[in-house]
Picture 1 (cartoon, helix red, strand yellow):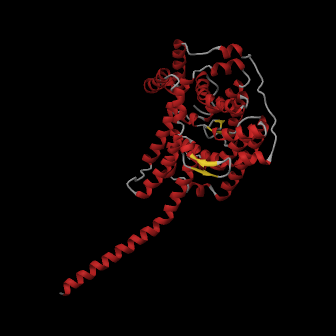
Picture 2: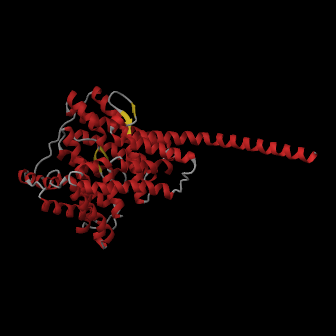
Picture 3: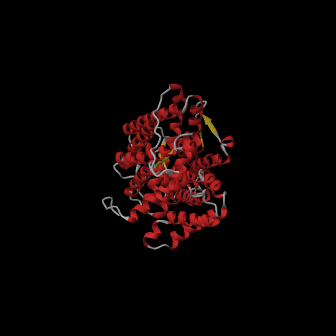
Length: 430
């Protein structure tokens, strides 16, 4: 399909598949923080369209509600009010723009040095695995339904022909939903109670330096995640999005989308791993599909009945879908290491890999048991962000030390050769 193709039933279904993939996680953030789910859906769709406009419609990325800000939003909500939390999102967007300007100034190649395959491979693996508990928790609500959903995705991807091979996620959701109806676990009350059309309850932001001091430091974490997600997306598609359209442009797109979300009363936006998983499974990378998915999300925010229908999808069905999507992302990380032919028998390479993996995977034990570096009373580096920082730092350190180590080895080797030569001369003289 070309970006200029006319709207068709097939492309609509492909777009709808992306909407289903991101819907649950996007509305979960407002449910946990007290923000309005319809506003979150609107800002996700609208923010995605802004992102595509800024990045030249080249990157097949969907923006959804960021989980990284849940804790600090709740803190600010209880201390100041939700308006101050969304106002702080405007400041977060400004931090993104500042970082984009710095990257534009120093050049992406200097930034790229921090993200060779030996670093990005483990980070991509962690992006998939760190989300695993979410999938397991949802699937464990009814493992039978989850397994049926997983099987439907895998079989349709393996055995499907033509168009049906491109919509395994939608097929999995449909099969899981029908099976759930037969199991009697689908609650249709939300559809009955919802109005046909409804206006999202937009909320004007308020600003406080104290509230910003709580929320803005988390931007350090989400910028790390952004780089990892854009790298992952590029690895799936087979393109270098850090170079074209450029990391500075993707950061600007994400930052403006987040700032607009704050202005309208929504949570911060972020690139979504679920949609990258859909790309990996379907092999359809057309950005137009994502743009139409964004339009659907915006329309859904005004359609009470339709939005309520999507909310009736049982948790274990989405758990089964997430199980596949997150697993695909982790597999891409492994593929990155394999394709780059990283020599893991070399302690230099293996140390970067295992330090990154261990720090990232340790967060699966829960924040209380994970390695944490406190940035402030309310912000910290842990999980993916800590793993990325340590992996990048260790790789740079070892890169600096390697020439010295090689020089030392060469000197030892020359000394050994000289000693061997002296012994040979002594034996000859005798």
